[in-house]
Length: 361
Image (cartoon, rainbow, N blue to C red; front, side, top):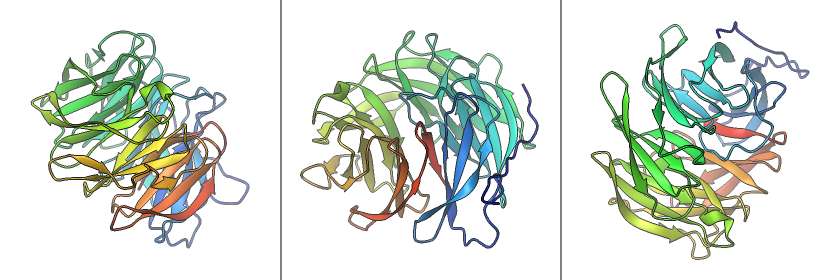
């Protein structure tokens, strides 16, 4: 279904499609309401000091679920921040926004190629969506230059089975592979992507630890995966892998966070640090990354920062200077990343309950 441009106006007089005039914008942070009565992307101005200010909202044209999605990566920025993609888990659709100097403009909306999309990834003009319904799959799309989402015919590929608790999908940095985590089967799927954009697979791998969840790539096709260990107290961990010809070689197996329910993970763009958000502890655990992909805790007790109650996602700014943690408890918490990897508070912004997904520009 193709939808016209949708832009609302909020009571503060700031266009839902844009930032207030005269704001000294260093960038933006986006999250979405995941509301079953109408999903919206919430926009926050990001200042040079990392602080956030509300800057309106934009309707996706689709529906959320109102509940947790067990996911990471519901939002993704494409083409150096020119486009923003958002999943609509309640209506099984994908929305595409143009990122303009005035904010967000809904450019297109289409069926996700499956049921209950929870995660989306993009490289260049090629996007893939992870559909986490009972008959879960991945499905490909081209972003046309004019802002149209074109499904890639016949691109749907299965996961290792049905109802596997699919959590996240991402392209490898070189664009040659896709990875998907399966929470309920303790598996990680890889797919090789050909020149026409088609994914071949899955190639199924056993996770190093239990409940692989969120993940992020570093340098040299290294990938770092959070492991929630079923939510067992103080039992969660992070593993690092090397992607080799579509396979996974374990580098650091299940390095403990010492915290509970590490479900989300982000790596700085310079590849130096990884941060895991611990839903059960309300903390962030930081790791130092060696050139060969080995990881070690930044803090012996596993607590690099207090995230706030019930963190549900996190993302790093493109310059590796700031980390933003989305808390279902009602806030986005900002942190300045010090040279040592330590995190210093950089303010927070209020969000409604039920939010899902975060992207930083």
